[in-house]
Image 1 (cartoon, rainbow, N blue to C red):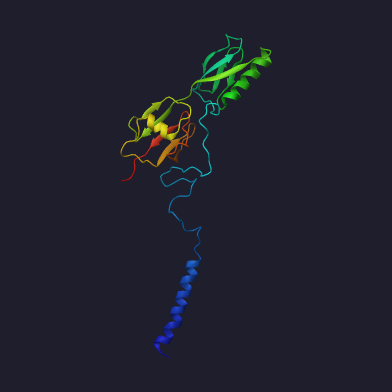
Image 2: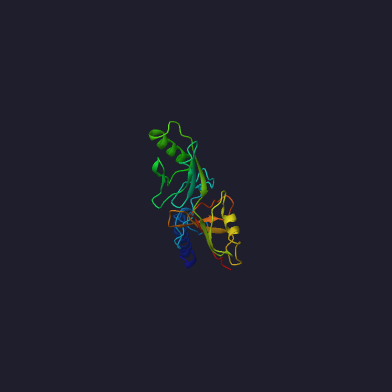
Length: 212
């Protein structure tokens, strides 16, 4: 038998084994982009938001109160009960006759209902209560902006308007993504720089430096 005729079967066998090994690697084992999956923490400890998650709207009627927020309570026909109040560190607000009410975590309509129920059950026959927002907690813009610092919250705020309020981005800034630490959390989450991403009271917005 010639050496050439002997090598042909051996070569065919080697090629067959190689193809079999490659076929064992599926798409679930090889990433198509080389990045961390959406919704998981990256190597830097920064989490990416889940793709189908929708941040809370910036509408004042949908925002939930927290310590530091200032409100105006108006009880129709009861001037002594009406006035400006601040939610304290415990998340409560103290109003004459109504006493102490848990306000943190409630929306404006929910707080109106809670105050109405409290006054109606104990003091007034048919109270009409309106809650108006005097001011929410401030938000913060840090990192690669011209004027980092604390700013008063305003309705309809998003990441682009927040950056503009802080004087705009520096020439070193990453203009594609932004990091946001939502109020009450300890984690910075990565979001696209888009007008659809709201900034909420107490949020910390950080603009990172881009890699040249």
